[in-house]
Image 1 (tube, rainbow over the protein chains, first blue to last red):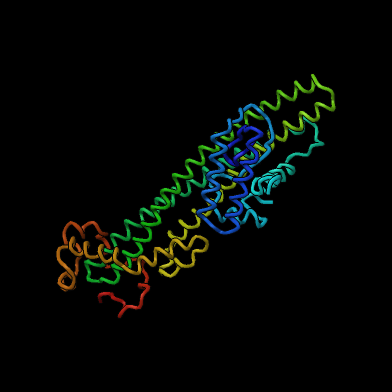
Image 2 (cartoon, one colour):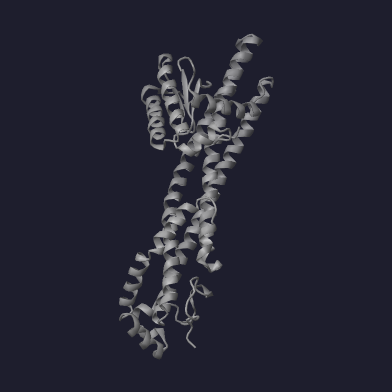
Length: 92
Length: 286
């Protein structure tokens, strides 16, 4: 599967990594909803780390859509919150 | 929640797709979608140029803040040489704010520099992908049936479109950041012209930082220390120097330190406006 870290690039991961990715993703969302800055920061960092460590960067000449797109690495809790309330860093 | 995909990535992906839908109509012909990619690439180049322009403007503001720090320092010395300690304090307080702002501007410009490099690299990558799309399009047209070609091309177009949306996002973030920085730097540059310290609290978004700085200032430790240092540099401390100067009249008598101040107008008050805090009298020598 292909995962994009927004503003960074695409990585190719194993299909079997999907479950871990979703788990980490949802942990970040829970932390965001709880307004726990430290927890959000940590879980989001773990998610990005997992993608970078386990994924292979997708070749520049490959034209493939992503299966999963993560927010930019410098997303703050505030950004993420706005994201979930509808008017995020990516205008909807 | 097994089986559900990640909520964060789902939202981000949906939004990216939305951006993409706006740019890519799957029913459009191959040629048209290639033309559109080229067009969008031009927008990316323009966006990068905007980031560069904004950065240059910030650098100009940085320079004007540096000048302001120098000027306020000179004015503080002049005021002190004339025995107007409150006026000197006001100048030093403003200098302190300008200096703090200068430091944050410094690191922000560096950050912008880095973003500009990343954007340039992204633009290059996008260019490669569009070129790839162009040649792939020709191969597919020649080798596949219309229906299969449609599927393959549509996937490739989505891949390029996603890349494009992503570069656009990075660019938007860089520009937003620059706008904030410009507004803050501008507000601080105008501080002197506005003549009142209170204006700093009406800076709008991002004012928290300055509020904090102001609180820090209100303890005046840093300003007091600098005031003391300046007094010492001017030759002697406090009232003695004031009395001496009050009768002497010319700041130039204070030798080296005072000579750095503007000799043509030794009586010019800092900022040309009354000090913000209520002071006994105007403090002007008659």
